[in-house]
Image (cartoon, one colour):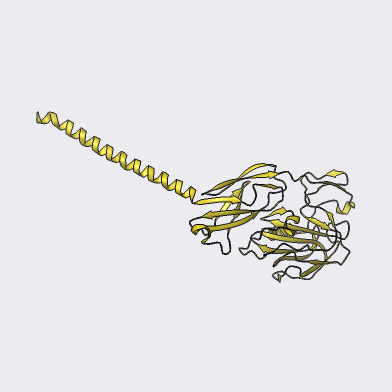
Length: 303
């Protein structure tokens, strides 16, 4: 009789241990689930606009209850840095706020894209920029995009500048008083050949030879070079957080690399150096390596 009870006693203990194990596992699962849900609720990724044209800058805002050293987000298979918003720490019930400026690439197809990081996500509708077509005739010697040795590397290094401080606090200044001769985003046919991969990355100002060129916003000169075959004499200014302005085809430079400049400060003179068919300033504003529409920076700029 005693022996016949032992198996039942063992079985009951086994059930008890199994139930306790299941309870612990279930409790752990619930705890993990609750933790995951809480983390998702405590972080938010939002945009200053739910849609943007190709090349139109918008602001990305990331809010989280936990401070992060180097937060990022991804968009269209690229990773972008987020920066602490000045004076924003502690705002909004103790949330930490980080910001970045994004401009959809001119080459990016219209459509809906996801911005995300490990804690949050949102969507952006990219709209067709509906850019103009221009027809251009150039001398055979300039009917190419050939560069000088080291030119492409120097220009790309300047575009990739991403210092943490945002130097500007107001709308950007037009770099020249001359009229705009070529708008942003224009497609081109040169000497009868359509350039399928070409978009005009900025604005052209058709000023007289030697006309003044000024800095569009405060910043630090990161490129000041002469004699480039494609860009000619050129200047690039870092305005902070991935925003870099370029001034191309200059006749003369009035700044040097590493120099701090103010908005409206003289930095050069309009010229016809490099690949240019007449005196003009080619002016671009790159936003995290993507060309953005300068007109969006002259009025209602993101600050």
